[in-house]
Each structure stands twice: as C-alpha cells, then as structure tokens.
Length: 194
DNA sequence: CACCCGATTATCT
DNA sequence: GATAATCGGGTGT
Image 1: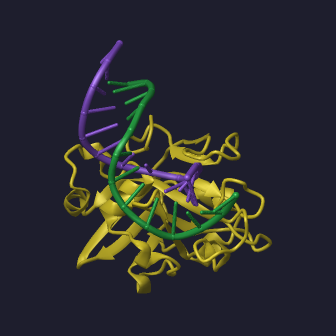
Image 2: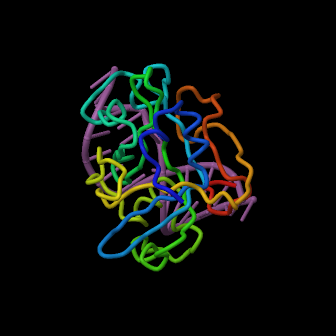
C-alpha cells in the first residue's frame, strides 16, 4: 500500500470519488492509530455543480475546495457534525472535492466506539458525521495537506480485495438530485443506507 | 422498519 | 428568518 499523493487527486473529481472506494483513511490521534476503509463517497464539483458548496464561488468556508488537491476540506454540517472531503479535481477546474460518507473500521475500533458514545456497533462509522466523530476529525483539519507530516493521510487500496462499485444519487441535497455521483462498495454493511 | 422532530450554528436571503 | 452534503431518539405500524 502507498500514500495517495497529489497525482492521485489531480484527476477528474468523479474518477477520484470512485477510486477512493477501498482506500484507507489513517489518523494518528492521541497516540493511537485509527484506520478506516472507505466504502462510500460523493463527488462535489465546482462552479458547474449546483449542489456543491463551491457553486457560488470561493468564500472563507469553502476555500479549501479551490485550494491545492490532496488537502482536506472539513465543514460544520447542520450546526453539529463535521464532514470530511478530499480536495480533488483536474487542473482545468476551479474547484472540486470528494465527501467521505462512510468507512469500515479497520484499526482502533475500541477508541472509535468511545468517541461515538453509542452502543449500536454498526452505527460507529456509517455516515459522514459519524465517521469523523469516530476518527477524531475536526475543523482543525480544515485545509491541511493529507500527508504523514499532518498526522492524517490516505493509503491506496489492497489490490487483492475485489468488489463492485455501485453509483446512485447523492443524499441530502436539494439541487442536481439526478446526478449519480454517490459511490458505494456494493454489499458492504458499513454503507450509510441499504 | 417508517416517519417525525429537536439539536445547534455558519451561511445565505 | 430560513436553510443546510446530519444524527439519534421517539412514536407508530
């Protein structure tokens, strides 16, 4: 497995969103190593995607989506939950990112459970605000480079693993609802809805 | 399982 | 004042 670098993220946002399925989020956190396998993503484009935070241009909130690829865009959702995106787009585009919607816990599950303060095991990481809370991702990560020097980074998928990717409509949006820009590992029980 | 609703705050109208 | 890339607890079927 190798660290995903700028060359991985410097591609079409939809391509990256699909390629991220099966890859790993690693967070070195309070002396622990937390790892989750990505099982669900959504692509958000730039000025051409009405559902994207970047649609109306650059603001203080969405600035990372217009910044260098391979960095994190974290925002506060509904006043209480953090959502984590990787900035990804081809160089001709102004903005773009991939929302990580769900991961499968791989390492550090006990700490993830503590962070979530919830008993139902499947609900630890099966949603965009759930997995960030489980893995200790906060607004402190907004704009940081995804690299071991930042304590948060992504690893490539295990090529010995085989799975199908399913495309569907993005969840929770009121604009551009027909685009099939949500990608899930088919049949994985950690996907946010079944 | 389905639907309903309150929590809580940055951003936009 | 309304909305939002959400979540969990409640009630009813």
